Length: 122
Image 1 (cartoon, helix red, strand yellow):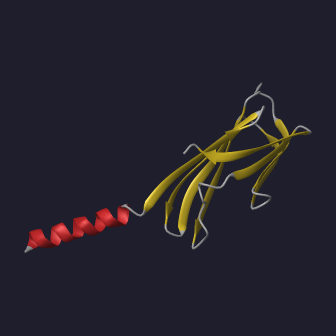
Image 2 (image 1 turned 180 degrees about the horizontal axis):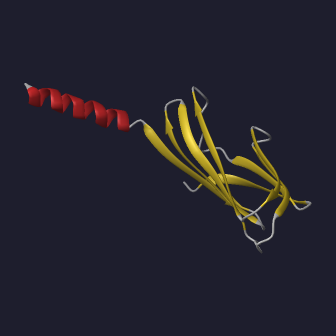
Image 3 (image 1 turned 60 degrees about the vertical axis):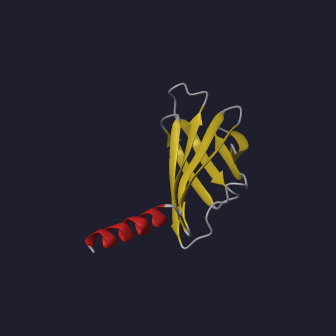
């Protein structure tokens, strides 16, 4: 009888794990590369944006502003030290990211501006 309960429990855990989907979207411009990775489970999403400045010389990036999807997420830093920027992203009870649609990214820094899309490789 115990074997039956263990088998049922394993089947349930396997089915629950099957609902989690991992996505990865990437893109770049002349000066920046970007990536968004996330784990999605129904209406919950846990992800992270990572942006890398290609022309890093060790100096600060002045007036850094990263805008994602026309303002749905914004990061602003007056003086950012480093060439890699990470932005966590999570939600519950939300409309999760559709990997077939591009994510629009606009980055402003040092009186410059780049725009590019993050897209699925699929």
